Amino acid sequence: MAGRLIYLIGPSGSGKDSLLDAARQSLAERGCRIVRRVITRSAEAVGEAAHGVSPEQFAAMDANGAFALSWHANGLSYGIPREIDDWLAAGDDVLVNGSRAHLAQTRERYPTLLVLLLTVDQAVLRQRLVARGRESLVDIEARLARNARFTAALIAANGAGLFVLDNSGPLAHTVERLLCCLDSSAL
Image (cartoon, rainbow, N blue to C red):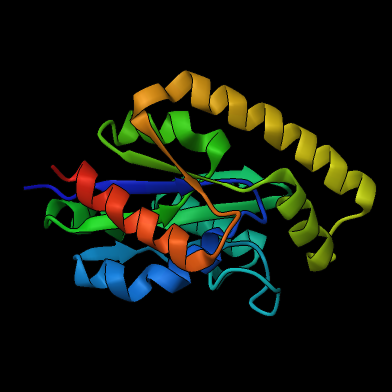
């Protein structure tokens, strides 16, 4: 029996990394592996616990077939290691921190994937993005406007094939909803 690919998406600042960290043990107890992405952001950069590589290293890895999935966004390159295919074939569920813009390509390769969209109230998201200090206020407002349009279009296009998790409140509640979603979708 093949495992499920669980594709977590959401805007920058929605709390995907915090959710994965908080749910890690419970997911492992359910036989779900969390993938560590390869990213062209330095290992010293604040953010997810990804494997940082140079753009040249990433390009070489991609050319050598190291990734099951790869994409470019916001000036960075992201890769999901090819070993997920072995895990899925062995019956393990695999959760990846994916890309909303790469969803269609991912669905082509993994047509039965489970898509989880992590959302957050715009005011909460604004506060998180400002606190990170990576972008100007003008850039943050533009990001928020793009996010609102993208989220609405994503929900409209995916209907029942998409589970929405609101992460505006306590993280423990979001973890609980994530686990309930995974349990109910396994039926």
